[in-house]
Image (cartoon, rainbow, N blue to C red):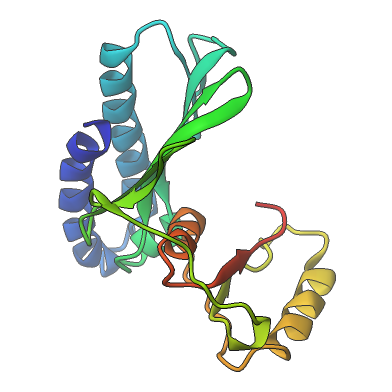
Length: 199
């Protein structure tokens, strides 16, 4: 419910991005406010459901510090994609209890795909059961990564690893810019594997 409600304003905001690309101010400030607005809607919905739970978010930090039961929220995973009007980003919410993630939701509002998983109950895409790929060999696999951050101190090591892995696979390695969606795509078998350092 929190994802669905937040996605309405996020989709509206996404529709405005292309118009802002040509403005002098640019879309940066707009995206920051879209991020905060999405986060605020999610927080309100989660607090309605469980006011006693803690919440850890990207923008607001810790809210109602309950370390035994808490939500972990990324309102827009794939911000640079969103910023550049690329329709590949997601709302990501996890529920953690006693330092263990019990379930999670990754919602792609543009494709209207909701991935959810709960420990012991499997993983689903729009209520249909999903499974990982059954490929056994790395060289036959379609892999995805995130690559190093601009501020990374290990860029050369990460690029070196990328080259080594890319020499072992037939298909070029993908880089889409939304870690949560990349992992969700592994979960449903679209990708065969994902790796990323310093995530």
